[in-house]
Length: 322
Picture 1 (cartoon, rainbow, N blue to C red):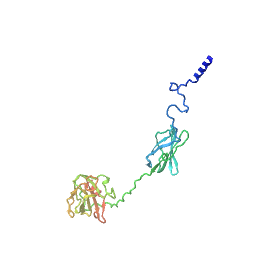
Picture 2 (cartoon, helix red, strand yellow):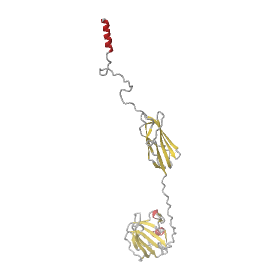
Picture 3 (tube, rainbow, N blue to C red):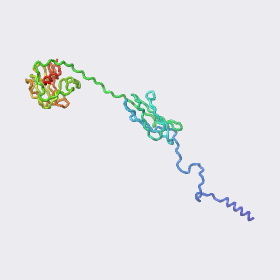
Picture 4 (cartoon, helix red, strand yellow):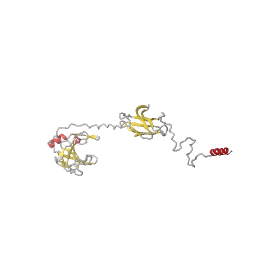
């Protein structure tokens, strides 16, 4: 009887012995939910990649200019790399003109794309499209916020209008030397004939050069080549400056321009002898700034019906002994 009672007590004690718990310092029982015990849950990958960026700089160019710089970025949460390419299409018609393979593109990173150097975009419009495929072969998702495309406009080069040169006035051949004999050189002092731009017939805006420029120091006397009568003295700020016109005794008129301001010492109607001082070398009116005498010889008369300028250089050389 005592043996049977001891056995029953042992069994009862064994049946009510508690399981070890966290509070007693034992190991926690495993979670029945099956989730991880530590850390955040892994993110769910995006269903498809999107074009987070596709920009062109600049978006408008002139034909012949370097192609725009293209910057792209593909985003797809949970995916590290996608296969990508850029295609350029000519509009209208969507005719491909270039394909640039970007290989395995790292997501969420900007990549700069350059079109082939040999590609010369002609005048017109072009569409640049980004294509991407993730490891599950899902293609780019396009929407209004992320279309994955942009346009290039190529303008025609600006061509400066061709302005025909002004028709030169008919040139009258230089007549024989003056019947009055050798004349007096019109500048009393050192001089130079300068370059081609100062010659008779050189181009000017809207007209031709109707005389010969004689470079000389400011203030040197300008004198009459022949005896005659002063027919005009005046000042033209936007042209000849201070000038004198001599009606020569040989039947021709002589024009002296760009004289020093207020240096004219003859009056209209005055008779002068050959070599008489008229004014001084200057740079008044419209000039390049260099001091010089602009000298013209006119047959018949200065700016009268039937009058015309002739090249004075041959006679100037003869008068100067050059």
